Image (cartoon, rainbow, N blue to C red; front, side):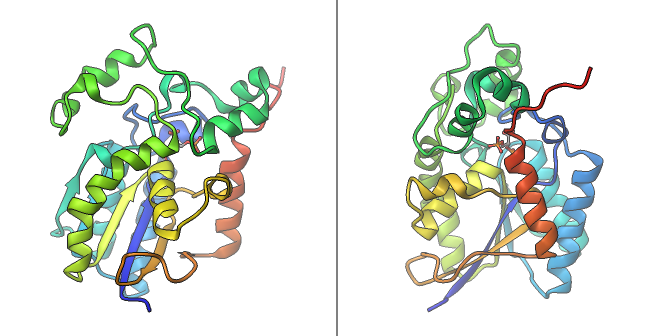
Length: 259
Ligand SMILES: O=C(O)[C@@H](COP(=O)(O)O)OP(=O)(O)O
């Protein structure tokens, strides 16, 4: 029986989503389109009569900005926004900054699909020679985490995302849900996929075909044990949502650059 409702949201389109680059722990703001997506998401939730008592985000700007825009559109600016690195996007290691279509040309679409969607394959780690290494690990936000900077990930599989996210889910988010607070998690494609895998009991194989578009609220209905009891609902125009999912999937296709 459905006892609790929970919303997951992948942030609105970010600048590097648009450029088809692996963004991961690089802190990019929303694109103009991403701002509109987040505002539209808030309007839709308001129209449908939903309210939030607390919002959880990662410590990456695109998820925080999305939460703010959603709350503003709902007239709920006063609602607390709680941030944690444990909701950050998956750490894509040395793939960070690279263009997916170019990687598909170089390494093949299958390899890029494995990197992006397999459950337990960790991409190559980032090291100090990587152009974004210092930008990430010298960022003051990472001194605020519950683990020291040197222990923070250097690359993660989806499984490793779930391993670092679950303790936070259990200790901090679950108690709010059990208090019957209306919770929104504004996070990322892969941190939301990891949580979905856990809540819906999706197999290691089947999670590969779950793709989330930007700016679309995902409604989950959970039972007493916080397990999903109904198929997830992606709210909004279903044809547009399917097209947006296909667009994300196609980001990993090899495209020959026009001369
Ligand atoms: O890191 C990124 O570039 C994307 C996910 O990339 P894919 O797994 O879809 O390749 O994360 P998000 O935009 O949700 O923060």
